[in-house]
Length: 223
Image 1: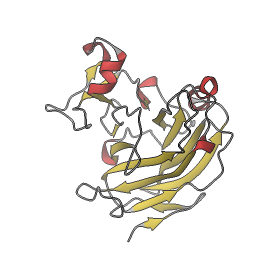
Image 2 (image 1 turned 90 degrees about the horizontal axis):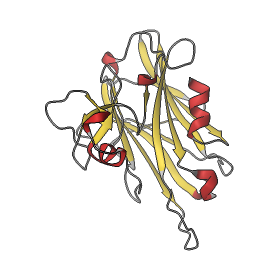
Image 3 (image 1 turned 180 degrees about the vertical axis):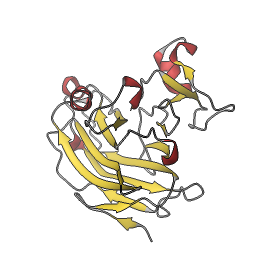
């Protein structure tokens, strides 16, 4: 049975290699002029609470990439290729996944449409590969162009984060899950969870911290 954590709660991650699935549903609004585009990012910070370099912000526009198919499955050989491999940003985001230099955190293929069922985006992690001075990995979700589109997290429901191992991808098979039940109706970005080192192990903490600003506000906080 999955371990359920609530805001402020934490538990040990007993898996070394796993996936972090993030899901949500957007309330239907026939009058909406623009689609919702939610983006996942991972900030890998050191003891200062900041990312050491830009390479440790793993997000849809990261310059270091791993080639992948349209479903996000990595293509062999698994090696980092530069963003210049592609003719455009759209092509890059559709054909690759962002990654840190150690290939310890592999971001999701960019999914602009989200999903009604199952995970909207997935991050793959291998904790033994995380750079030694990285103390925390904060996983965030932001709404693209929220201000101009008049959008906020009040229009998002049933958001969750879950951790599961290979072969246990189905909903209900996860090891750990956090259902975000907080009110983020004025927020354009949210810190979902953080993974952090603790006495030689890794733990996950449910954050549920909302921000009025968009992705740029998160970048300002962690850089």
